[in-house]
Length: 137
Image: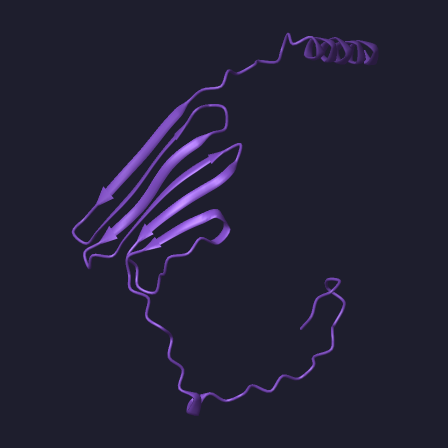
């Protein structure tokens, strides 16, 4: 009986190596998307892939106060590239990590009152090892 089990495993392994059992799937393009809107906001996302790893898409939102963000992106052999168009408060034009942020919100400089700024004392804390190497408390 053991001989039949071993022989069956060998035959099965041989059929796998010759492609008799494996199914090869062809690449397939896809698209999907959604859009949701209510009385106060709108959200959306749309994406298309060519079946070979390249993807193009966008997503975003808008709220009744007039604040909006639209992100357009491409992901392919050259990596992920995105462009963010927004008027969100506190944003400024910048290009971190190959992402282009285009703000329509005027950048307000941060004002610090030097009278109320107090230096923070920093004390050395010894490293504690035990649960994880290099864990510092």
